Image 1 (cartoon, helix red, strand yellow):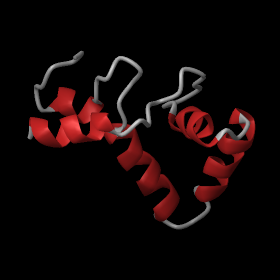
Image 2 (cartoon, rainbow, N blue to C red; image 1 turned 180 degrees about the vertical axis):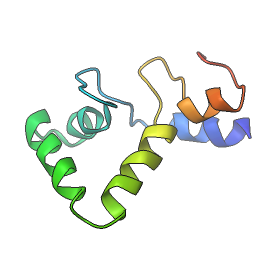
Image 3 (cartoon, one colour; image 1 turned 45 degrees about the vertical axis):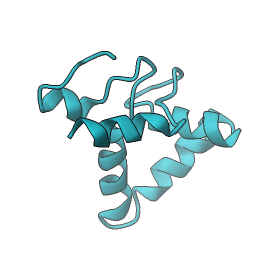
Length: 83
């Protein structure tokens, strides 16, 4: 199971330090170079799509590493909280 989380960490995407809720929009804005407020509006607009927007956000929320490389889903399964 740790190999899955290690492969997630190899992707350069992290939750953004400029966050309001989960940091997903901040991380997406940092990777794409889009203004963080515009990305937040895009994420909110995606919530209008039935199940897809909120479901994708929740999946990203549990699988995306924080700036310190800790992953919430790994912490639930008793893995290391900080690498």
